[in-house]
Length: 279
Image 1 (spheres, rainbow, N blue to C red):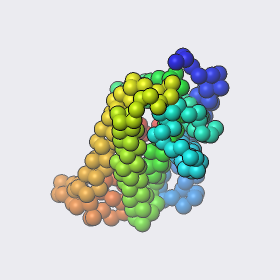
Image 2 (tube, one colour):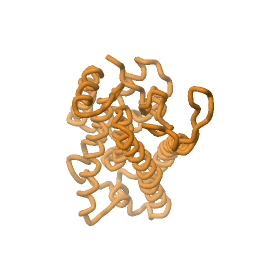
Image 3 (cartoon, rainbow, N blue to C red):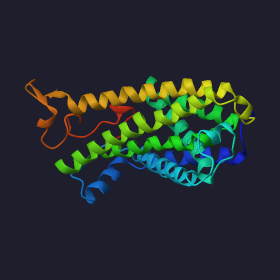
Image 4 (cartoon, helix red, strand yellow):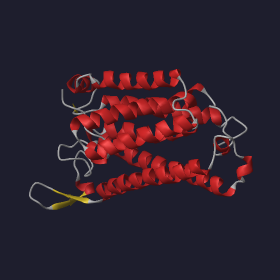
């Protein structure tokens, strides 16, 4: 195990951190005006930084999955055989994610939210440990889970009744599909392989400590996704109160789904992301 893989890895981390910092410096008001000019009825608090990250991470993960699907050895065998990165994307994505996590950690410390501090710290520590162990590139495909985050941020736009409903449904379905089906399946397959495949066939980088790290970190991640997913379902199929205090079914919403906030827009903060500053 090395303390840090290479100067190039550090360069990718710093570049990612700097990119997200630069994007965050773009005033939210400017971003809102651009969306309104493009046809949105209203745009408030759109988190461009996180939206850009979700697009980059998801696109990179899709590229990794498409490339690895053509290889003769698939996951989790690749991980347990300690195979090198399958592509430049699979090598770089974890370090890009680490840069984003560090940026989130700094931002969370600045706004003083303990839950976001723990999230940024946890992701950063896990990625640093995996990088030091030389196995971080095997987690590149996991970045696919950010695919739902882009739709989360689109919920800060008012696109009209049909547009809002399409965005809400896309967010809910992508969240549940990616974080309740795809990721848990990969996790179970990895854990099952670790406890059933003969250790004599494993590579030098692999050991039961990696398997147990995957058990603990995966359990925490899936528990968090289960919480947010249940919250999404509760809001999507629950009830809300109107201004008189009477409950209304979700279907009674006029221009947005009932699980949006009172301003008619979605809330990133309630689903695990702090809201961008109105500057």
